[in-house]
Amino acid sequence: MFKKGLVAVAVSTILTGCISVKEVCPPNTQIDIETSKTPAKTSDDIKVIVLPVDMAFDDVAKGRLQTVFRNDLEAVVEKSGAKMVDRKLANKLKNEIKLAEQSGRLNTKGVPIADLAILTEVTASDLSYSFTERKEKTNDEGETKVYPAHCDFRTEVKAVAKVVSLPEMEVIQRIEFSSTDYFESETNNSRCPISNAQYTSMASDAASDAVKHNFELQKLLAPSAPVTEMRQCEAGTMVKVAMGSGKRIKPGADISFSQVFKSEEGDIETYTIGDGYVVQHELDAVKPSFSWVAIDEELSLKLRKGDTAKLVPEECAVWDVKCQLDNWGV
Image (cartoon, rainbow, N blue to C red; front, side, top):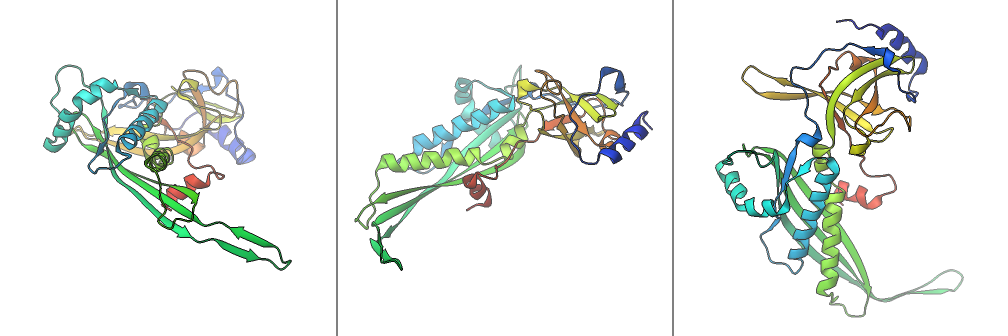
């Protein structure tokens, strides 16, 4: 159906080009849009259980690695705005959920435990080293520089997490975590001794970076909410989404939009239809429970009330070399 005001907005778009929208359209510019038959859930409606981390091999850093991975995964869940199941209950239900993974369904009674479960296993923590002998180099000016003998240590940590739906135990996503930490020590001992404490510290830092620099779980659990309104004015076209500063939404943040369809057989299918960004206004664009997202004309013709708006997490900053290397698998 043709929507009123789209011609004027199209002209405005041509004139303004790629200039970012910096003001919110007033209430009297609201236009009618269709309503989705399968409205989106907000992040608040999603409950996640993070199970204790498995580690099948012995290692002096085992306990620390399990703790770091679990703590950091829980931090990602909390940041997403999803509700996290109490850790004591998660510990109690670990065996039951692991058995359900093998059988294909979790037997539940009464209120569901959670919508998603995260099952994680540390698969490797490998320490390697190399020894470099003392060297002296003299430059053209006759100045001699001494390079002390030293050992270079490298610890690589890997883990795999499965995000499964409850009670069906269907794997929603399989996420691989990997990161490396480095340490240098001046020594004449070519066998490169390292204490358990030093190795554990390296392994812990690598584990933390592995979660911090992996954005798959952040994308999966990123705050989401339904579209509730559309407005069009000279500033452009924008939609109101039911999440704001309470979900750490900020002006300029990227937002992805998708639609959910349910077949006659009950199958659910999700389609991404476009993206936008939060209007660049510090005061008006973002409130505690909602925000305004600028979109283009093509997307405005597709969006319906109830469609899903999801925050696109920021990935590696240009200056964060460690994050870039982890994502390249270096």
